[in-house]
Amino acid sequence: MIARIALPLFFLSSSAFAGSSTFKGTIDSIVCHADNISPICHVKVNGTPANLGCGTSSWHYTFDATTTEGQNFLSILLAAQLSGKTISLAGQGTCNLTGGSADLRHVIITTAN
Image (cartoon, rainbow, N blue to C red; front, top):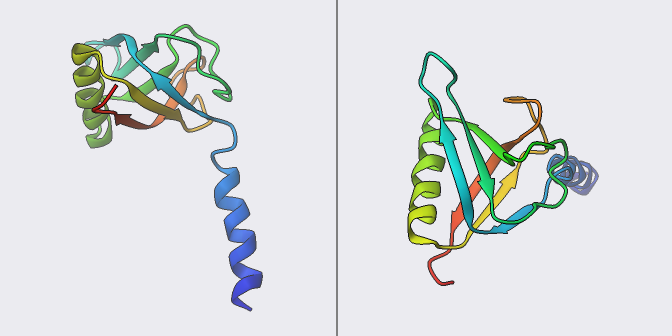
């Protein structure tokens, strides 16, 4: 009984991220706007992320800087950009925040290049 439930749940959870792959590299640019313009920050990486799912803009990823998660993303991204460290980024497979950039799912900073 559990196996009949667990297997479909596995496929549902793994397909949620099927539209996006992980990019590993360095940050080119980060832009955030004043609150009265937009709470959205945009990230451009050095290189071309594969399979963003929906992103067609030169600004590859977006996130909402007013959320706790967005503030965490911004801290990690700025640290990576200033230090030149390698990061891993993944999108959610959606472009809900802006039409042409992938909604950011996670950011990982790598301490050894």
